[in-house]
Length: 102
Image 1 (cartoon, rainbow, N blue to C red):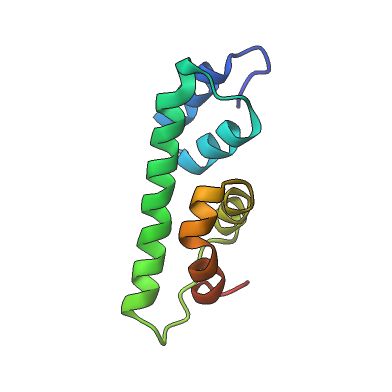
Image 2: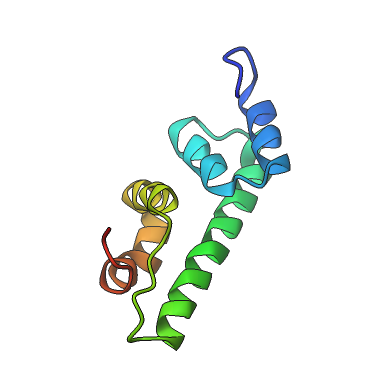
């Protein structure tokens, strides 16, 4: 669990070690990015993009399947897409069209 007294950078490092990249990106979106955290936030964005790409690729390869994202992960991605214009522009329409709502 993240402690309130920790700096943003410390929280991001803990999440990185746990490979919780979506949580990292959500934290980056909710707090002011600094020079100290810029690299970690960029890593979080790249890893989140990889996860989105992976699920969209699976859906594209198997268009008639009922591929669904884990509801908790999907909720995180929905929040990220709402709050990150770059990712929303890149994935928003595909995400809505291809990922089944649970």
